[in-house]
Length: 174
Image (cartoon, rainbow, N blue to C red; front, side, top):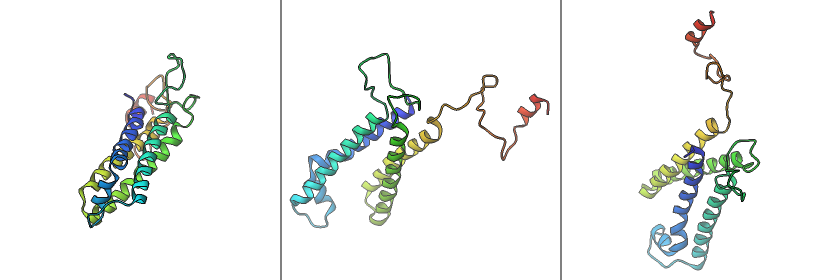
């Protein structure tokens, strides 16, 4: 499976994992977060379920806008993430925005983990931090095809700074 598709489906699964308890049992979430055990108010239940549904929506939009699901009726067209592909014109912007979300969420979870010491925040740091690392890798390396030399097989955009490639210079006769 392509790393880009792994990130897209992984983000949707992470959002669904977070949304499930918010939608199914907002009273349990409020009981876990409040210092005293009490029944959740109507407003807390509303906001909890609204956040859960928003997370599911963002996860579904992420999968659709990155081109992971082919939206055409023909099977021969397939889904790709290349910049020239008209089926996924929003792939890189969607990747960038969700990567920023994961970075901010991982930072916030880390701040809450160090402040409160609650282990659940550590899971948030691990999940969002991992997805941010994968997204950052995709932004750096998977968003362009590169310019590969037919002769040597090396990327033509590389430079010798700060280290020189002495083996390549020997072959050139320098």
